[in-house]
Figure 1 (cartoon, rainbow, N blue to C red):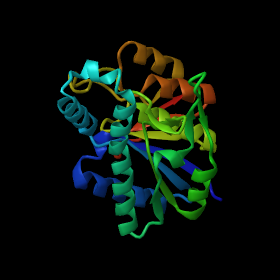
Figure 2 (cartoon, rainbow, N blue to C red):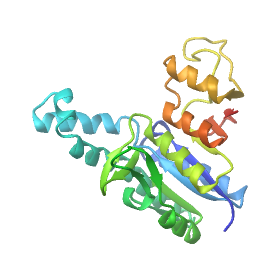
Figure 3 (cartoon, one colour):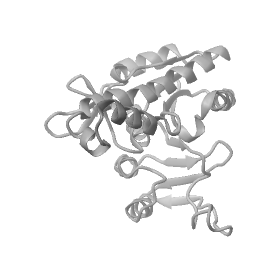
Length: 245
């Protein structure tokens, strides 16, 4: 089998049907320029998880803080529908463009949280089989299983999913595609003179996360550093910021 590239598409680029169309078109262009097979990790559409949280709160007639503790197993099951929906819709669009593509469920991904240690393990057999049969496999991010139940990996968990899969599958690097071009010297929404940072060390990126920069989930940066996996944070139109040693 040829090489494997892992790309993560954030919810901010999967906004409505036009978002899926644009993402699929970009992936078709990417396929034309490489022989790699693609694992595409997707988030729920922007705002979708918050919408589900509001609906859960209203139906349970409880405030969200009260709801989140005793009902966490049901909330994880509910949250998972957002990422699963994104995976199915993007795979459908790719097939409509005559790309050999499929989507998988959380139980097929192979990411599992160990009961005792909370360590995440990866069983690659099902995902590797899907990659052997298809050029693109679309994977719901943010999700894993624990004792065969769905669990979530926290805000920004799709970043972590993508890095875990890239490291375990032997990808040369992992790309996190967002609605911003990468890391900047300042907030570009506030400072017109903010400049894109082409390269960062893992240490600097972790320090920025600790200082409140939410661009990439901290677990994802730490896992990339542990695996010495080059991590690219970018938009569709930008070459982005490369994180490495």
